[in-house]
Image (cartoon, rainbow over the protein chains, first blue to last red):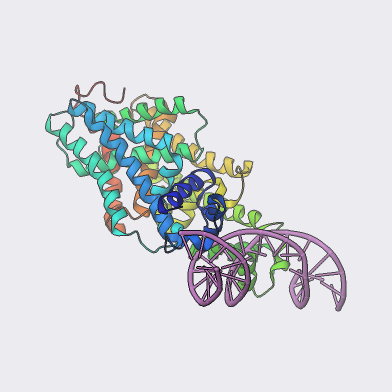
Length: 199
Length: 199
DNA sequence: GTCTATACCCCGATAGAC
DNA sequence: GTCTATCGGGGTATAGAC
C-alpha cells in the first residue's frame, strides 16, 4: 500500500459517497489497513483532500487541452465549450469540487498549486476567445471580459442542471446548453432598443 | 424558548460559521439549554436545516418582489437583475445554500415546499422577460429560454465571484456584473459571422 | 418543557511495540 | 510500515425524572 493507492481510493470514495465519506478510518478500512498506517504517506486528511481537488483541475484541463486539436479558431472555440460540458457531465463530482468553498476541505485558502491550475483553466478559454476576435468572428472587445461572460454562463447553466433544478435528461440538457450559448453569443435584445439596460 | 428562538439561532449560526456548526448541541449551548430540549420543538436536525434553506428562498423572493415597483417593463427587468445581485451580496451564505446539493442537509430530495419556492424565483425572472418581449425590447424568443440564459449567466458570475476566483472588491464586481450582463443581452459575435457556433 | 444520564455512532491524530 | 491502544473531541437521539 503506497501513497497512490490511498489517493485512488480517496477519489473513488469522494465520487461515490461525497467528501464527508473520505475519512482516515474509512479509507483505511477500504484499503485493508488501519488508520494510523495512512499517516506514513499523508500528513493529514486535509492533504488527501487537496490531492483530490487537484485531480479535478487536472481532468478539466485535460479536456480543454483536447480542444486544441481543432483546425480553426472557431472550431477550437467550439471544442473548448464542448470539452468543458463533457468534463462536467462525465465527472459531476469533480466539477462540483472545483467550485467548492475552501472551508469544505478545512483550509482557509487554497495552496498556490491549485490557484495556478484554476488560472490555467481560465486562460484556456481566454486564448480561444482572443483567437476568434483576431480573425473577426467576435467583436473587438477585451478578450478577458468576453471570456468571463462565457465562462459565467457555462458554469451557471451547468451548476443549475447538476443541482437538479432543470427537469430534463442529459441529452436534452446538451441541446439547451448549445442553444443558450447561441443566445449569449448572438444577443437577445432587438438592436437599437434597450440601450440603457444594465448600463 | 420556542421554535422561533431555535430557528433564529440556527440562521445566525449558519451565516456566521457554516452549516456544520448548526448542531443540536451547539444550538442548545448558545440558547442556554441542553440539547434534548430542542426535540420538543423540532423532530430532528434535518428539520431545522430545511427551515434555514427555506428562509434563503424567502429572502431572495422578497428582493425580487421589490423589483415589481418599477414603472416600465424595462425598469422592472433591470430591478429584478439588480435585486438578485443585491440579495447575493447582502446574504452570500443564504445565496450559497440555495444551490447546495441536497445531501448537504442529509436528505435525498427537497420537500415540495422548497421546490415550489425555487420555482417561484425562476417564475419571477420569467415574467420580467415576457414583458420585455411583449413591448419589443427583446427578440420574440421563448421567454422561458431567455430567462434561463439570463439566470445562468447571473448565477454563474455571482458564484464565481463568491467562490473568490475574481480578484476584485464588491464595487468593482457590481460593475463587472452590469457590463457582462450587457454583453449577454446584446451579443458578442459580429453579425453575419460565426453562424454555426454552438448550433 | 427542561433536565440528567446514557446509548451509540463518528472523527483526527499520536505513542510506542513489533 | 503496520499494528494496538489511546487521547480527546465531535455528533444524533431517546428514556425517564422533575
